Image (cartoon, rainbow, N blue to C red):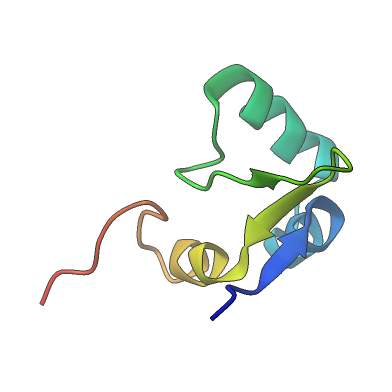
Length: 67
């Protein structure tokens, strides 16, 4: 099963930020609040949409769910 992904532009729009903010944080820190993109063979970045949902829900994107 493939995980749905978003482009840098789509992710930035859903978070209400500029695409360059994502790129700058990725360059400086290697992630954006725990979200790490996958670099495609054509050099495009694809961001996991489920991490975005956790981030907008107030959870850390890279953290595992606790019961």
